[in-house]
Amino acid sequence: MSVRETAEKIKRMEIRGAGRIARAAVEALRFHARDLEARDLAEFRRKMEEAAALLLATRPTAVSLPNAVHLVMMPLGEAEDLEDARQRVISSADEFIRSSKGAVERIGEIGAHHIADGDTILTHCNSEAALSCILTAARQGKDFQVYATEVRPGNQGLITIQTLSEAGIPTHYIVDSAVRHFMNRIDRVFVGADAVAVNGAVVNKIGTSLVALAAHEARTPFIVAAETYKFAPRTTLGELVEIEEREGGEILPAAEAARLRRVIVHNPVFDVTPASYIDLIVTEEGAIPPSLAYIIIREFLGWSIEEFHKTFQIAHQDQG
Ligand code: RUB
Image 1: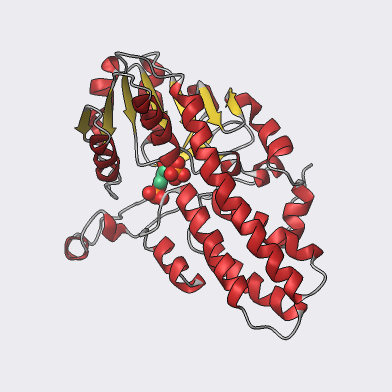
Image 2: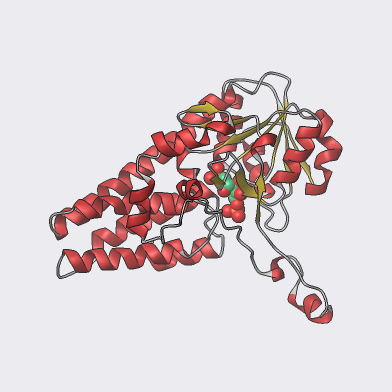
């Protein structure tokens, strides 16, 4: 798929979920690099940067997108000539896709340790990392059930219940506002992440923080499944993760909105769950308390903050 087509699909949420968005962007860059016609290395670099910028502008919250694009584009800096540059992008893209899939699998293995026979799990939205924990536990023969939320307004819960049902897992489907009503039946909550900040706060689908609040009140463990490329390096410099605000029409149809002229519709699609409501973040490098987010950013993302800034010409913020 071309870069433009991939970007459109990500914008329209035909490709969605932080991990899938990252892999789709990387795949698009890979094909772009393979077929790109350029006179020299400088032109190749410029055209690749334009393609990267197009992909980065699609959705602002999932940090997996800039992290993945950065990983693929980073080797361009060391390229000696055009063909070398092309090969470097292709192999770094292949490596990202391979390791991303491996990370989801490993997270499943680690997360499944936290699911026992007789458990009732709750999940919100549609996260392949969170589902990997649940599906791995099911494959291990554990006997448990899952509550899945509807997830207004995108209805991602439908994808989740389809996957759970196909895996033969007893599944309950509830509206988002019923989470607290059912929380006393829940042994553990599993969600994914679009971004993890340096202070351990997790950005995920709107409503996640309410689920966490209800879990906290009921003393129900709240577990986040997040690959290391969901951790946000820029938050170490005090930058906040941008919360995407989508069209009001996704909530209130245009005809209704036109009739109710004084009504302002808000449609933030992610929210922030503070670290104090999170018991564990399961990464492919192991399960950590949210307070260790900084270690993941420094040790496992594999590049320095300075390098990240240089590559994307992000204005350096005063840390003082
Ligand atoms: C998806 C969402 C998911 C995370 C993690 O939001 O919030 O929980 O992206 O998913 P949207 P994964 O549907 O708006 O993209 O574990 O698959 O990366």
